Image 1 (tube, one colour):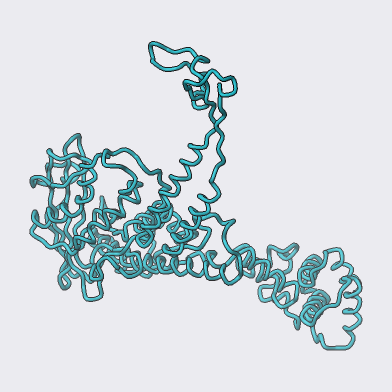
Image 2 (tube, rainbow, N blue to C red):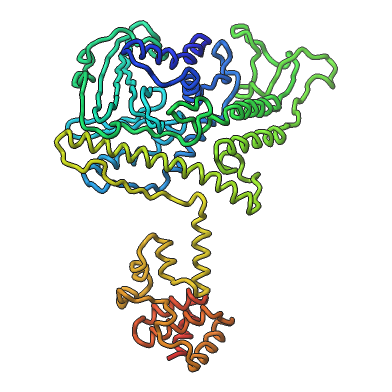
Length: 546
């Protein structure tokens, strides 16, 4: 990457913004500082940070590609096991395509500070364009900071020619106007285009030939696009309606981490084993003008003019490696990056080096939970608005669907809740007799309590729809003295004293079994789980009560 290219990249978004404003006579609500910041985030996400190359375009610092890793990991945590649907079947079919792509969309939004969802009618169907930050220019926003007008940039490159389409959306009252403009540029580097070029008809580009130059829709209550904005204050421009990248607060530490990583690699390379040997040990290749070294072992040998002293004819170069201190320094930087990005310790740093006191673990998980939850709420808002826009376009295309139907969301909560630990705690509650076994099974396998009952051995034959298997009172009056013998016998078989809850569960199950409400297999399984004993011991207890 040459210095000229780097300068062009730095000012590309600034010049593009000014170019757009002059070409279509509009005002873009993006400051110079915000435009430069978005360009920087985009370059860092693509692993081209400004500190990676020197002025000649030669790589001078090896990078960890942390911006992309952070955005990717956050999007994974945000969208893991997401279940979302629209109550209208026709809309839901189109919506599920977006749900499947949501992790990718979330990653782009996290990296660039935001992302626009733009529904597009195509051949009687609705698709959705995902417009990243560098191609989205807001023009209007209301007092709440919600964007009501924007320009979407679409580029096509054919050889050395760059075609650009500007799609302008604007909501005024309840009237919605969409205007499209096309431009052609044959003089710029296709990879770093600043000038839009000259205006051309949309029909000159086959891909845009069917696009209308202007379309007015009314009544419309909200923009026909949705903007997913990363949560949090924008410290770069407090008046901007745009969001801030997930790694914006950690860019300085990310640069330091890259430089530390580069030092670590250099330490490994600089301390490689080598043999310093005299030149007369090797033949010289006159054609290639270099010493002939053993093939594949060239890095091991270093040829020098050496003294004839037998003791100094060769030297083994094998210095000690200082990797431990360098790695610890890198790991501390990674932890600072995690903190600044709202991640828990161990997300990108070495999890083996994370302090593990209960308070620190909870605090770290809560920080990540807050970050993820805020992003999920922002996504919900954007997707709800997107569905409204989809419903408007569907009705315009002749399909009758409810406008702005309800969208349901079910997010995974395993970030702060260790599911295995939770299930273990529930299992212990069942063994203590304070939780019904079917509730535990329902949680573990994601089924209803009725389905959980049927999953238990023999239950499909006799389970009554209204039966509560572990109700301690379902087997009759457990307070009667006659049951004391059964409890004593059970304790003797189990080899332990039962607490009050276990006693109540035991007597309830025996009572239900004696009434024929439970089969033998059911009763054995329930007693085994409720008291925490083997099935053989549970069977002996049942047989002793008969």
